[in-house]
Amino acid sequence: MNRRAAFAISLALLGGCTTAPRVVPAAQIQAVLPGRYDPDNSFAKIIRGELPAAKVYEDDRVLAFMDYKPVERGHVLVISKRSQARNLLDVDLADFDRIMAVARRIGQAQMKALGANGFSIEQNNGYGQTVLHLHVHVIPRYSGQPWGEKSGPPMPMEAREALAAQIRAALPPR
Ligand code: 5GP
Image (cartoon, rainbow, N blue to C red; front, side, top):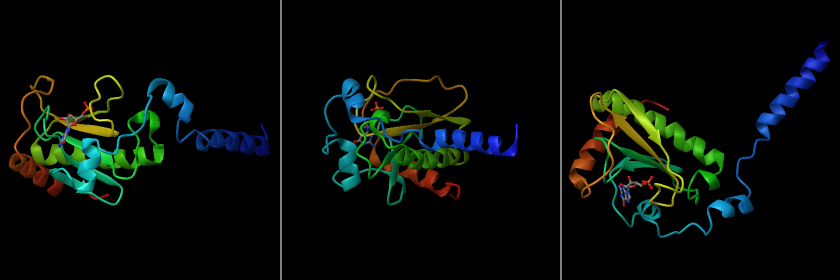
Protein backbone atom coordinates (compact mmCIF):
# COMPACT_ATOMS: atom_id res chain seq x y z
CA MET A 1 0.00 0.00 0.00
CA ASN A 2 1.39 3.42 -0.88
CA ARG A 3 1.65 6.20 1.67
CA ARG A 4 -1.22 8.21 0.19
CA ALA A 5 -3.62 5.24 0.46
CA ALA A 6 -2.49 4.53 4.02
CA PHE A 7 -3.08 8.18 4.92
CA ALA A 8 -6.58 8.09 3.39
CA ILE A 9 -7.47 4.94 5.36
CA SER A 10 -6.19 6.46 8.62
CA LEU A 11 -8.27 9.58 7.99
CA ALA A 12 -11.37 7.48 7.32
CA LEU A 13 -10.83 5.53 10.54
CA LEU A 14 -10.24 8.70 12.50
CA GLY A 15 -13.35 10.22 10.94
CA GLY A 16 -15.31 7.19 12.11
CA CYS A 17 -14.22 7.90 15.66
CA THR A 18 -14.78 11.60 15.70
CA THR A 19 -18.23 11.39 14.09
CA ALA A 20 -19.52 8.86 16.64
CA PRO A 21 -22.73 10.46 17.97
CA ARG A 22 -22.32 12.41 21.21
CA VAL A 23 -26.08 12.29 21.81
CA VAL A 24 -28.76 9.72 21.02
CA PRO A 25 -31.51 11.12 18.71
CA ALA A 26 -34.54 12.32 20.73
CA ALA A 27 -37.02 9.97 19.02
CA GLN A 28 -34.81 7.00 19.85
CA ILE A 29 -34.67 8.04 23.52
CA GLN A 30 -38.43 8.59 23.78
CA ALA A 31 -39.05 5.06 22.54
CA VAL A 32 -37.47 3.59 25.68
CA LEU A 33 -37.38 6.52 28.10
CA PRO A 34 -40.55 8.55 27.60
CA GLY A 35 -41.22 11.85 29.34
CA ARG A 36 -38.90 14.64 30.30
CA TYR A 37 -36.32 15.61 32.89
CA ASP A 38 -37.96 16.65 36.17
CA PRO A 39 -36.19 19.77 37.51
CA ASP A 40 -37.50 18.95 40.99
CA ASN A 41 -35.72 15.62 41.39
CA SER A 42 -33.61 15.38 44.55
CA PHE A 43 -30.24 15.73 42.80
CA ALA A 44 -31.37 18.91 41.01
CA LYS A 45 -32.35 20.21 44.45
CA ILE A 46 -28.91 19.33 45.82
CA ILE A 47 -27.28 21.23 42.92
CA ARG A 48 -29.44 24.29 43.69
CA GLY A 49 -28.68 24.01 47.41
CA GLU A 50 -32.31 23.23 48.30
CA LEU A 51 -31.34 19.88 49.85
CA PRO A 52 -28.21 19.29 51.95
CA ALA A 53 -25.42 17.02 50.79
CA ALA A 54 -22.00 15.99 52.13
CA LYS A 55 -19.90 17.20 49.21
CA VAL A 56 -16.67 15.48 48.27
CA TYR A 57 -15.82 17.46 45.15
CA GLU A 58 -17.32 20.33 43.18
CA ASP A 59 -16.36 22.40 40.16
CA ASP A 60 -18.46 24.41 37.72
CA ARG A 61 -19.66 21.24 35.93
CA VAL A 62 -19.47 18.25 38.26
CA LEU A 63 -20.56 17.53 41.83
CA ALA A 64 -19.69 14.49 43.95
CA PHE A 65 -21.38 13.81 47.29
CA MET A 66 -21.95 10.99 49.75
CA ASP A 67 -24.86 8.64 49.06
CA TYR A 68 -27.22 8.94 52.03
CA LYS A 69 -27.88 5.19 52.08
CA PRO A 70 -24.43 3.79 51.32
CA VAL A 71 -24.14 0.18 50.22
CA GLU A 72 -20.54 0.38 51.49
CA ARG A 73 -18.71 2.81 53.77
CA GLY A 74 -17.69 5.77 51.61
CA HIS A 75 -20.22 5.30 48.76
CA VAL A 76 -20.14 8.43 46.55
CA LEU A 77 -22.42 9.70 43.77
CA VAL A 78 -21.06 11.80 40.90
CA ILE A 79 -23.36 14.00 38.82
CA SER A 80 -23.22 16.70 36.18
CA LYS A 81 -24.38 20.13 37.34
CA ARG A 82 -25.21 21.31 33.81
CA SER A 83 -26.65 18.31 32.04
CA GLN A 84 -30.32 17.52 32.31
CA ALA A 85 -29.79 13.93 31.22
CA ARG A 86 -31.90 11.42 33.10
CA ASN A 87 -29.55 8.55 32.40
CA LEU A 88 -26.98 7.25 29.93
CA LEU A 89 -29.46 7.37 27.06
CA ASP A 90 -29.82 11.11 26.99
CA VAL A 91 -26.45 12.30 28.21
CA ASP A 92 -24.06 14.11 25.91
CA LEU A 93 -20.88 12.05 26.11
CA ALA A 94 -18.84 15.19 26.72
CA ASP A 95 -20.69 15.60 30.04
CA PHE A 96 -20.28 11.90 30.81
CA ASP A 97 -16.52 12.19 30.23
CA ARG A 98 -16.29 14.85 32.90
CA ILE A 99 -18.30 12.77 35.36
CA MET A 100 -16.08 9.74 34.78
CA ALA A 101 -12.88 11.77 35.15
CA VAL A 102 -14.05 12.75 38.64
CA ALA A 103 -15.35 9.24 39.42
CA ARG A 104 -11.97 7.67 38.91
CA ARG A 105 -10.26 10.22 41.14
CA ILE A 106 -12.86 9.50 43.83
CA GLY A 107 -12.18 5.75 43.52
CA GLN A 108 -8.47 6.30 44.04
CA ALA A 109 -9.17 8.49 47.07
CA GLN A 110 -11.50 5.86 48.57
CA MET A 111 -8.71 3.30 48.34
CA LYS A 112 -6.13 5.63 49.84
CA ALA A 113 -8.24 7.25 52.55
CA LEU A 114 -10.58 4.47 53.59
CA GLY A 115 -8.40 1.42 53.02
CA ALA A 116 -10.75 0.05 50.35
CA ASN A 117 -9.27 -2.79 48.30
CA GLY A 118 -10.90 -1.49 45.12
CA PHE A 119 -13.98 0.30 43.90
CA SER A 120 -16.97 -0.38 41.64
CA ILE A 121 -18.60 1.97 39.18
CA GLU A 122 -22.36 1.48 38.90
CA GLN A 123 -24.75 3.45 36.75
CA ASN A 124 -28.40 2.41 36.55
CA ASN A 125 -30.66 3.04 33.58
CA GLY A 126 -34.36 2.31 33.91
CA TYR A 127 -34.57 -0.78 36.08
CA GLY A 128 -32.93 -0.09 39.45
CA GLN A 129 -32.83 3.65 38.87
CA THR A 130 -34.64 5.73 41.47
CA VAL A 131 -33.42 9.26 40.73
CA LEU A 132 -33.82 10.44 37.16
CA HIS A 133 -30.78 12.70 37.04
CA LEU A 134 -27.84 10.79 35.58
CA HIS A 135 -25.51 9.66 38.37
CA VAL A 136 -22.52 7.39 38.69
CA HIS A 137 -22.08 5.40 41.90
CA VAL A 138 -18.48 5.03 43.07
CA ILE A 139 -18.62 2.23 45.63
CA PRO A 140 -15.52 1.31 47.63
CA ARG A 141 -15.03 -2.43 47.98
CA TYR A 142 -13.49 -4.07 50.99
CA SER A 143 -12.21 -7.63 50.83
CA GLY A 144 -14.41 -10.04 52.75
CA GLN A 145 -17.47 -7.78 52.54
CA PRO A 146 -20.46 -9.31 50.75
CA TRP A 147 -21.92 -7.12 48.00
CA GLY A 148 -25.21 -6.00 49.54
CA GLU A 149 -28.29 -4.00 48.71
CA LYS A 150 -29.06 -0.62 50.25
CA SER A 151 -31.45 -0.60 53.17
CA GLY A 152 -32.30 1.21 56.35
CA PRO A 153 -32.55 4.90 57.18
CA PRO A 154 -30.20 7.53 55.74
CA MET A 155 -26.75 7.78 57.36
CA PRO A 156 -26.60 10.82 59.68
CA MET A 157 -25.18 13.91 57.98
CA GLU A 158 -22.36 14.22 60.51
CA ALA A 159 -21.04 10.75 59.65
CA ARG A 160 -21.37 11.49 55.92
CA GLU A 161 -19.46 14.76 56.35
CA ALA A 162 -16.63 12.96 58.17
CA LEU A 163 -16.25 10.43 55.34
CA ALA A 164 -16.47 13.18 52.71
CA ALA A 165 -13.63 15.06 54.42
CA GLN A 166 -11.44 11.93 54.45
CA ILE A 167 -12.04 11.23 50.75
CA ARG A 168 -11.62 14.88 49.78
CA ALA A 169 -8.24 15.06 51.52
CA ALA A 170 -7.01 12.05 49.51
CA LEU A 171 -8.16 13.19 46.05
CA PRO A 172 -5.33 12.90 43.54
CA PRO A 173 -4.53 15.91 41.34
CA ARG A 174 -6.46 16.22 38.06
P1 5GP B 1 -30.20 4.72 41.72
O1 5GP B 1 -30.93 3.60 42.38
O2 5GP B 1 -31.11 5.73 41.08
O3 5GP B 1 -29.10 4.27 40.81
O4 5GP B 1 -29.45 5.45 42.90
C1 5GP B 1 -29.93 6.56 43.57
C2 5GP B 1 -29.05 6.71 44.79
O5 5GP B 1 -29.24 8.00 45.31
C3 5GP B 1 -29.40 5.73 45.91
O6 5GP B 1 -28.24 5.00 46.25
C4 5GP B 1 -29.91 6.62 47.05
O7 5GP B 1 -29.50 6.15 48.31
C5 5GP B 1 -29.31 7.96 46.71
N1 5GP B 1 -30.11 9.13 47.06
C6 5GP B 1 -31.41 9.34 46.74
N2 5GP B 1 -31.83 10.54 47.19
C7 5GP B 1 -30.75 11.09 47.82
C8 5GP B 1 -30.56 12.35 48.50
O8 5GP B 1 -31.44 13.19 48.61
N3 5GP B 1 -29.32 12.56 49.01
C9 5GP B 1 -28.30 11.64 48.88
N4 5GP B 1 -27.13 11.98 49.42
N5 5GP B 1 -28.45 10.47 48.26
C10 5GP B 1 -29.67 10.19 47.73
